Length: 280
Ligand SMILES: [Ca+2]
Ligand SMILES: [Ca+2]
Image 1 (tube, protein in one colour):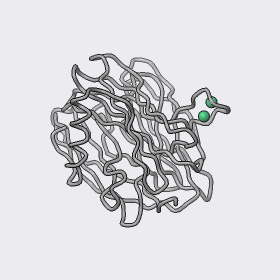
Image 2: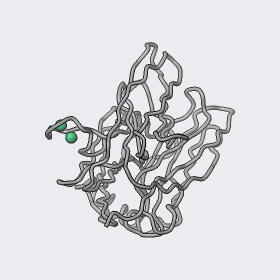
Image 3: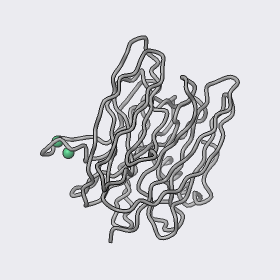
Image 4: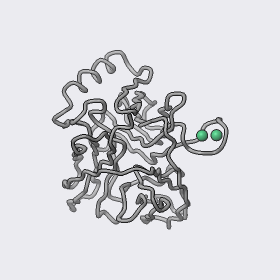
């Protein structure tokens, strides 16, 4: 990624240190009652891997995301979602997984926003026709707000939209590159407290990668985020979608990079951050 958010120089130094050391253990930044986990990987080139950032013991996942050091077309994330481990029960509260591929030498970072209060996890399924895009909202119960969401499933489909919807849920969409109908799993993570949003618009030109970030409102902390766009065909990939500035109060937010594979069409996109007041 060639562009960084204004708040990124310190982060860049930290990332550089990690790069010099090579992929290492997860780092955890604590702020406002949240544990922000970052786990770096250097996956084998051009194979699809599922990479994991685990929440610390005693915490549950509220959101997650991914970033990579590659440029246009050098990484193709398929799905980004909360997962369940071998703990008691089946709640996908244990951390964040991202299914992705990357070119040689590309470092991929997986992010998880974790906290002691346990959110409510809503799940659904979405059938998608061959060579088409399918989308759906995953609703939260009345009185809850969605702070994040995602999809999991076949590697021939990739997530292209993931954002708060106009109601009480989270909207996700995937492009199905396969010749078969496929069904994916969908997720929304819902909380019973007030959500503060930030969003802004950007454009991605044909055959390029574009990034954009938004900051949380003053007095709030980043939880999750995502991206909406009007691309209706298999033109777009979410190259990165991640929290930035976590622990840096007043300069935290969400960052998205999109790859536009179309030869002619410029697509507008919206970057969203979901933020809450500190938990403690
Ligand atoms: Ca679990
Ligand atoms: Ca379990």
